[in-house]
Amino acid sequence: MKKTLLIALMFLGVLAPGFVKAQTFTVPYDTVFVNMPAGTLHADAFDNITNITYASGLVINWHCIASNFPADWCNHLAMGICDNKTCYPNKGDTLLWNRNNMSGSLMTSNTLLPYVLDTPGQFELQMSLGPNSSSGVFYLTVNLADAVSSYTKNITFLFNRPTTAITYVNKVSEEVILYPNPAMNDLNVVYDAGLDIKTIAVYNIIGKVMSVYKVPSTSANLNLENVPSGIYFLRLYNGDGENVVTKKFTKQ
Image 1: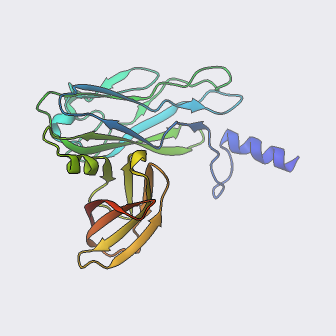
Image 2: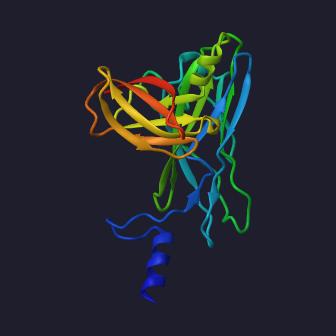
Image 3: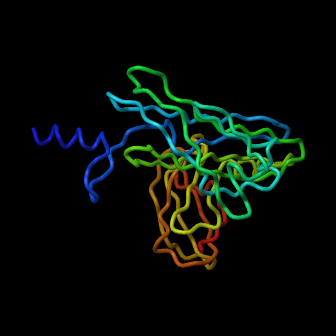
């Protein structure tokens, strides 16, 4: 009986402070990776939201909390986000993400019914770029929050837009994405499964190994809390112990 009551209270979001908020929604991905080769003018990145409760609808409050998008990616013609209510352009370059004060307006979705009654609710980042738009690796992180229980989750849309002139060696390097760079306590690494990455090592500028990580097939989150501030090299090794790619990053 006590266990049943505890579960019920967790789903209702009324537990006293100190209790863990119950998960009330899910998304398919923590990071949505989008490759936009030079010349690609439009891309849609989906991370639709599923209400996993059984009894009630929920409303999602969301806002952008971090990004390194350049100015030409932030204007109202380039950037837009759609939820299950409507699509919002980055009107005036400030509605969804303001590069000047690093903020995003709080938006509210329509009610999402439980998954047993309805399909996942739309959540999509739309990018429409000109042929001469900035190239590089850019990300936008959005915080999603259940308006009742305060359960929250961050999702990141990661875009790789390489330049037109890419040699074979550089192409392999382009398949490995680091963000954020500079990093604080965590560094995210995304790489192609075909590279067969098994181990990642962090080296300082004189070649000393600082940390070694065993990693999954396509992405990893590296904890850098014990790594001092400075410039480092990230070396990715395949299953045969070969150094496939080396990338430089900065720890702040």
